[in-house]
Image (tube, rainbow, N blue to C red; front, side, top):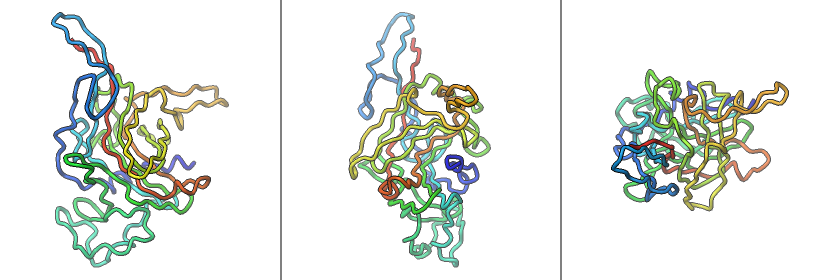
Length: 291
């Protein structure tokens, strides 16, 4: 039941990221090696018409604004006891909850001691929300971050997200969008530091997703995590069901409508309920045919 509370579509719209700078560096990059991601041998070149297969890096988002592959911005959402966190309690009532392109006043934000996140609040570009992007990790790299999260009760949650579609296409999956760049994906790659969390590839039905549990790192110790899609575990209708005699559903990128990095309340390990999570980029490895 708890898993079913994540990533409601309405929340995604309300907590859209405020960043408006296009990222011109996160398009598709072909090649078997990369200075910022490991794995894969170089794809052999050939002057003949022979087709060679090899690993190809596809950059999904570098989080320096809009993903050129998906056309979407990163965002965050928070849940308090399973419901959308009420951010107005941390905002001066005299300040507008939506200021369009204008920045709200510097004094609009109130004390956030009891807030789930300590990210700055803003009402610029969309209704009141946390700013989760633009964290510098050494020029020119930027990251998204859940800053000093504090989960205190059952069904509390904080997450970073990236949708496959935007605007009228929000909520659609890769198959419906006709995006084929990741059709032969074999691995997800991202760099992060911070608390234990789940990386999730979520379908249109928020109950159905594949996930991988990522471990906690040392403080500010950035690590690159490579997740073979074969290691993603299905939940909901994607999971094995012994009672119904159904097998787990293999990962299928065409069914994915969003990616999430989720921190959820952990009653068994209280230390997991406080910390920060920074994610640098999201990339992938696919098997492609190159002439």
